[in-house]
Image 1 (cartoon, rainbow, N blue to C red):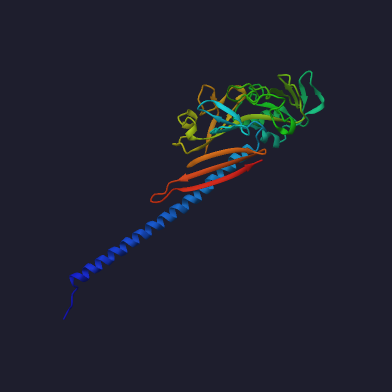
Image 2: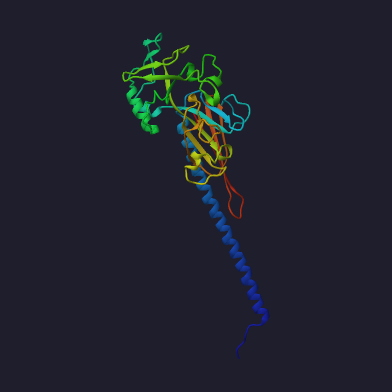
Length: 311
């Protein structure tokens, strides 16, 4: 005699199967969320470290004392160590370190051999032709970097502070409409002789060749519709972290996603999903902080914070 399933037994089996299915679905969902969050943590960790390393490498070659915080909304700026209100854009003037490492110039003045009356300085083991060649290659230009005012000289001054001699900071480097009283237009000959276009109040043994300014900002604080950003060919939003370069404040220029007709230079993408970027100056050291945030479907967003000190 064959015995079949009763209706109650069938209902029980279906109920248990449904419970197991729901449990399996939730377990698989939780497994997916854990996997997605682990992947997001890994990607954000690498991306944040890469962005800080790239900024730190370029910031390390800065002209000391030239670093500012800038607010594009009102045009205000100030030296990084003295600003009292938040400024969303970090800017600084970089030195021609590649040319220095190639020994195109020494960065030092022979005070005894120089003629301060004629504004002619002798820089031993320097060659203006080699400086021209390396900087033309760096910025992909055929112009004479000295004649085109693409490079200028900054005396290191006391303790490498940059702007010195009582000059107001706003008048030292040409930032955002300010004058450039302490960054000198020069020419350099093949024998290393430097001719200054102006008569400086003081001459120091050590100098920097400034070749470009740099700016770091989130997309939320700049003009994302600027042509230079459109030329990247990728859609960017407010959480993008951008590095601007190849512009020169001493020529009245600002970075290419700033407002105004003097915008110049180019841009590269450092990272996406950046919720915040901060820079502060503490005892001569610049401390960078980056916060990254990425939403994960079905869970809370993944948050990564990192810091880096640049000496």
